[in-house]
Image 1 (cartoon, rainbow, N blue to C red):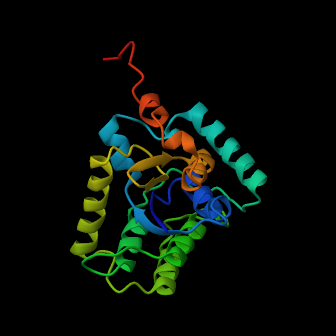
Image 2 (cartoon, rainbow, N blue to C red):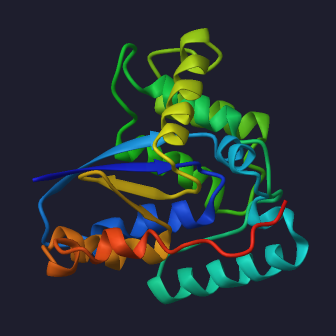
Image 3 (cartoon, rainbow, N blue to C red):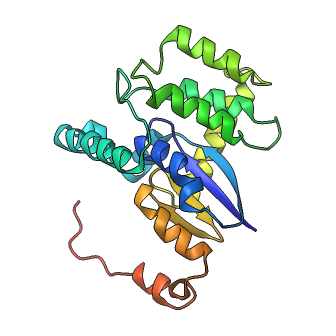
Length: 214
């Protein structure tokens, strides 16, 4: 059995679609998943990037493209009333669901948070909706507890240390697969595709850079 780590932020529609599609993409394979909620904005800040929803022409294309992807995959999706939004309340809620001293939220808890954001088209940070979500998840720790805040910071720092730059990223056997469109590649690796056993993986990642912008 392979152990996967699914790094995500519920602010990402691609993370939502990848989360929903993962069981179908890996059907027939033996694996377990550890869900690792991190602050996407922290990754962007570290690597000097903007999120796709922060660049207006790219924003329009992104939401058209995810609507099409959801249509193709048969996954319901509704853009929340505001996007981008501050996902800290949701991330801390997910960390509060994990046992203190280690562990991670389970798939059902992650699913509830993803559906809170990406189904129904409501405001992800509406106070009443957040209160209802917290009551439904019944986390063992308070989301505003200092240990929860530190847990989120630590996990985001671990993602950066691993070189993770975007979400969703799925980690397995020291390899990192980024994005919804990497699920087929991930499945091929888990099925033992010989391409991953040879030099191709490593060689493809060392293309020399050309012009660098200052």
